[in-house]
Image (cartoon, rainbow, N blue to C red; front, side, top):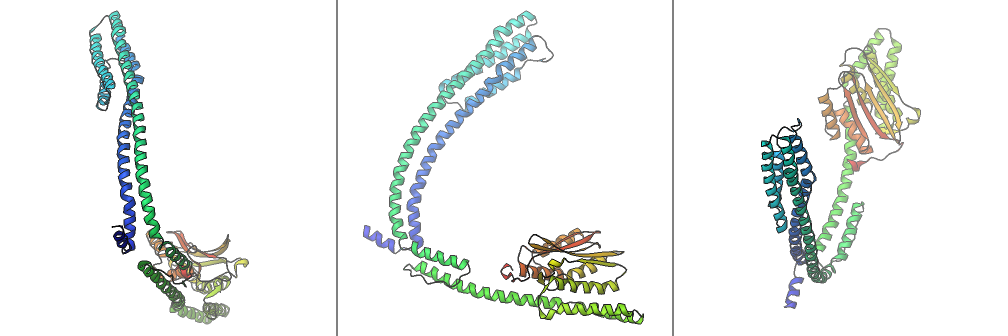
Length: 481
């Protein structure tokens, strides 16, 4: 019989073996827990009932006599403070006594409650008798000989009730302790037998499992740290061997996918930059050239030369010798040349101011970060507002972060549109190619702690804030995308 069981156990799968061991421990444990909970619940219920009775009885006893005696005294002397009999107080005492009676099982306690109910009925009768008495001396005599005596008896019987319930509570506690000790001993014996049996089976089960599992965990840890070259584990069990094969294949697949993702992200970034460069509105170039022609025809040669110089700087910094990353100084120069050109065309409505501390000039950032934001400020803020407006571009250092703000006092953004814009930027959705492309490239190169935020008030203006790390060299954070 034993050999046949052992052979059957060896032929079980890991799931079946583990389930068998768990059931061997769980079923006796559940039985013991149910038994213990049943004992505890029974005594807890009794303990709660008696404690509740003692608490209610104590609160009843504390103020009943003094309250009734005082009200009856004022009533007997025809005081304005008490114009009617305090029958409601006695009826409330009767209600409390009846509710205690429903939860009281101890004989002496129930008898005390019956006495309280009888005395309360007698007290109401004496109250009505005093009400029919008009003579002052007779009222005072009834008050002393009847009312005060009955309220005192009621209080004494409630004290007796509390005493009996407290004694009963002590008996329940002793009985509960004895039952708990017996239950604990029985459960301990059962659990000791169960634990010994389960330990024997667990040691046998874990002998061929723990070491391979430990090796698998080590392989998984190495994969989590980015080490995708893992060794094969020698395993006799079929399920764990299959798991090891799957982990090694997964590591190889992840390694390949990461390489592909990095390549695709860098390609995507270059395409984004090319698209951003290609989206420079042809009308900007046409209008700039038309403006230069107009300046020449008007004899304003110096202004025409300066505008040609700005246009040359604009395209030279935009190309940046094919580099995707430029210094903050170059980016500011590019943006300034753009605004200089636009200021000639929109001199009646546009002013701008750019501030760049010398110590931040060599900070690196992706090309075409500020110019699209300045363009947005011009076309969606300044031009939409009647009258002259201004664009401020400021750069400052806050700790280990460079904060760049592109602010205007143009028309601003409506609250609903601003909420859509913020949500799109946070979720990396496309809502306006320029701002979306800038945000994506910032996250690509610097990661989640950095990027772009927008604040605006309609009719007051808009501020776009960019946060980047202080670095003259940096590595794209492609894993964050």
